[in-house]
Length: 55
Image: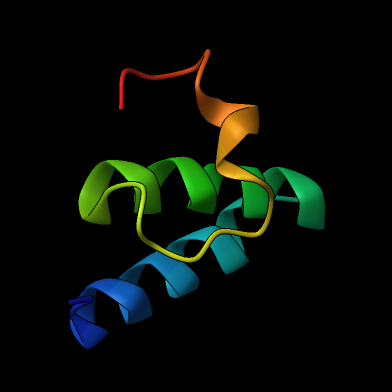
């Protein structure tokens, strides 16, 4: 189950650290996948990230 504090931190961090929405969304997805695993909700299909990290 996802921790609300973790979600708030990630949203705050990615909202203010990236100039493009897509970059922020992809960075969020990678962090969420690392933190919560492949069952988390992502902005893009999980298959897009299989080459970027070992899940």
